[in-house]
Image (tube, rainbow, N blue to C red; front, top):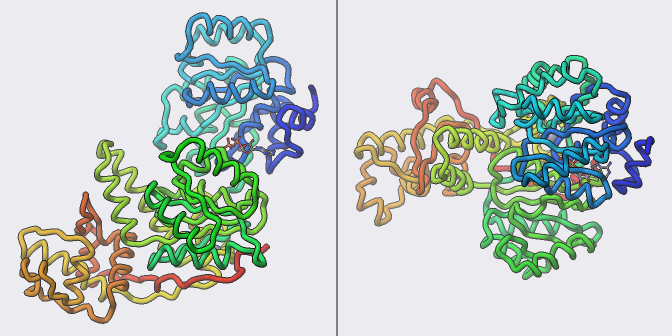
Length: 526
Ligand code: ADP
Ligand code: ZN
């Protein structure tokens, strides 16, 4: 077949290219090099699969995800594409069969692990057949600054000199400028055309509010945003644990929402039935762990709700990205609270990884918290994380209803000095948020009496706020890096930045607890 549209239709069953796909496909078919930056789910695979079927010869696809190769190749074979892979999981006869097919020009796509492609024998072997193009997937693995760095990727730059006439296409979902420059430099793609897709999903309205009584907040949200003129809309609610998935699914069902639980612990038949209903019907809500969604491509999901904090901005982006694939207005809603922050911290602290790994996880969480606490446009903050600058969107909660802020310096000093005094006057004792709030409110409960904490000079000095108010202050102090929770019990300690607040050198600004953005704000935009 020589026409890319015909390949798209007859082989893949799609009517039209998406976004930059068409220009990318043309560039490669015409023999040019390309660098493709596209968000996950944007449709990178077709950018090399279609040219592979249009051009003569076999395309080599370099992918570090050996575990996925068999699946990817299997999916292509299902479509009738002549695809195969070479990696270390194969038996000798299997490998020979693939090699013979390649030399006989009976393959359109050949997936290879990067370490193989740095071997001279492999290069010599490939030269004996006909290469149509080289696709380098997950190209950011060449960046020594990222955590996906693969030394084998460095040798891929040489391919430009070995096969100067074979077009190369490098693809990644990482969009920062530094990574892009590194890819161009190390993979010798100076002459490549760059295709930078926007990571923006303008039809999604982002809302993040502070947890208060979360089940009720979720129900309120679905009752206002989950219906269009009384007709229920399709949505996904993400929760962290199987137990809370079941709890929220039941709560919603009890309150008249057609909600079904989905998590890996449910019987396979039940999960399959839930999935079938979700895909086939309109207006169902699935309450699920993050296991739900991989590869689920339902275009008209109108809302995605998070009742627990995602571990990273990438995760949040990917999960919320399941809303509104059809381009119509959709809402990404989340409620999060102090307990979420403490719990995520605890999971990091208690995990098996080494210190470097824990620090990296901590930074991912910090970025997520910054997104939650920002007083400026959510979309600006989100896209900045992916290396893209935009103007305020006018369609997120902070744009629609700019949060009031207040000077929280004195409140911050009260909290921080309580932590400091407990540490200094009581032999390095550390406590969680609940106890600190009791001290600030001057609650003489048994624990306080037993520990003698009524004697602290900060005991009872915080009656200007209630318990919810203080928990909000502590949560925002953590998000701003002035307090750090640790370990199983989420005990709080000062940070390097705390001192300047205690000395009065730094003022601290807090958001008023997020006002609810209601009504059809998401719907009417665009
Ligand atoms: P990425 O590799 O960028 O994460 P994929 O290539 O896996 O994305 O594509 C994501 C999903 O979008 C897949 O289900 C794919 O079939 C679908 N898709 C890609 N391009 C198109 C298109 N032009 N029309 C319809 N669906 C598409
Ligand atoms: Zn905005």
